[in-house]
Length: 476
Image 1 (cartoon, rainbow, N blue to C red):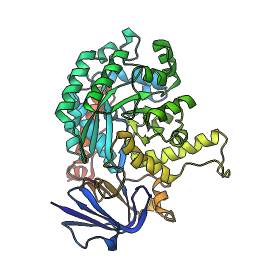
Image 2: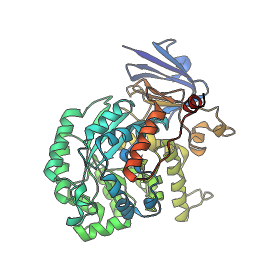
Image 3: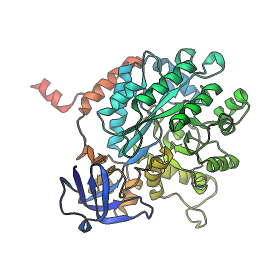
Image 4: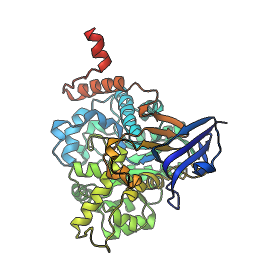
């Protein structure tokens, strides 16, 4: 059995039930599980490994509840820069139809590397494209080298354009094939219990590209195995119009009709939700993955996050696709969540000077990224730093120019100030990022490989920037 001692953190943010923030705090960990939390002087004097976090703030690892790793390959594509969701999808399908298994492996490592550097310790990805022999196994294999916890969602589409859907027919699968492959993945990979590094999620893509039969059968399969269910919902007004025309219901009404409500379900976006539907979310304990950057990027709207939280609905953060956010930075997403909630409050007539109207705070934003994300994913073993939880934590050096003058409140500064890469990222007691560098990953080589794949898909030449070492070699 191995032990790990973290001590002398300037502030240790627990996110426990009491929301304790401990000056000169630390953790004592045994085999990846936290045994003790408190002031450094209250912890054991030694361990197999000791980490001195003087000058650092330590927080629970951040949890990403919605992503599409493969989209790192099509960031900032010109034809998709200035269009809404439906046209954005149509601009990307010609590129995505060429993605192969190696591309999935590479884009997974790229997205997870970026997430790890931004403080993410658990990531939920939604892979819903399977052309050219792609399998979810390709993503799972790519993730292993990075070391983050993975919620691998077996996405799917079976409603092509000839049936009234949005995606080309060449991009959809047959219902029976989807269910058969999902069952295979669950039986081969899914882990249950405390500390699970890999879990499988059942995740038909969206009402705009999935049949009613697939929605119903997916729910049955997931509940047979005790898995969680995930899909996009109420992301745009166009989606609402589509659901009314195709199915005769608003998006949330449709979810009730196909048995997609319950504490085992979480939805991405959930922007166009009315008061009655918020009550439905709360009554059935459905969760929400809030994706503020993507929603702003596509001009989709602003989700009613404060109303969700007031109704006791679990809300987490998602960076969403790296072609609709163009980044995978969890601390940046926390900041965006805080800021856009304030924008929405202002649009609704609130004011920072109006004490009766609560304004979304930095600590609430961090809570979405930690406790909130864990609750959305149904994970009771992550999201806070307390005995019995997994030793998933991040450390950020406060002695940076970006925090200069902002340390009146270091916890708030992590959100208010410019988003930073973390200096430490530890998952189950094992460093994934050490002194600001990814452990075991040749990042320049990965970026070069990724850019070559992206250029092949889009036909747009992407320059490969040479590192200093390579330039010096050539010059000599």
